[in-house]
Length: 113
Image (cartoon, one colour):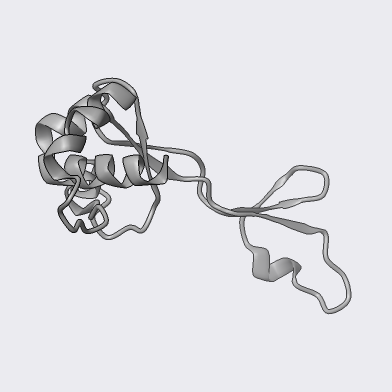
């Protein structure tokens, strides 16, 4: 991944750059209105979501489908699990299908090294 990123470093080193806007990536996996984080991985993977939605469970591990039913004052057997959903996209897919965001991502990665 570093080799691909460093290929464009000389071309844009002196240009002022914006942060990547993941609108097209989110749109490609039908998550256009979401604010899920985008993770870039090696490979040609098209954008897809992984992870679980937020939910409540009992301390014993059983799923709670109606959390308001369990909300007694002073007593709670509920454990909240936050969402782990994220959008995963391959860097080669990003380079071919969204070159502007690839460029912005690459410059941000180089600056943070």
